[in-house]
Image (tube, rainbow, N blue to C red; front, top):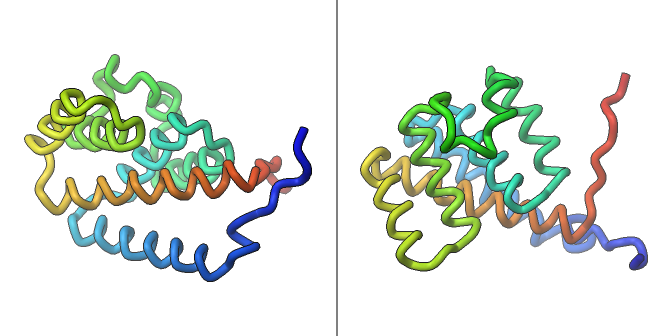
Length: 154
């Protein structure tokens, strides 16, 4: 096992602060595009599931529940294509986020992009793409730093 990981967000604070400012700008872009926070949290969770980021999953599942998301939809999110629980807008956002996260071959990227493009406005598509890009960055920060998931305070 390697030595204790250096928490890069704390070690190089100016870079992390810049990442936080990007996240704030993306949050504003999602609001300006009229996207519900619940949808944004679904994207954050799905990206974090793909990347295996326990810390970000812990944070964003709690945020999604606070925004009114249901435990049923969260429980089956990994298999969203196999259910009828998600709206077309949510399906489009999830397809786009998965494609941005996994970067499949260009044919699959085009399929996912076209699916999203047919169901999202340009502003929505751009905002969701930025959410996925930023969540991927935050996942990597947390994974590299091995941010712990702690039990809730009682």
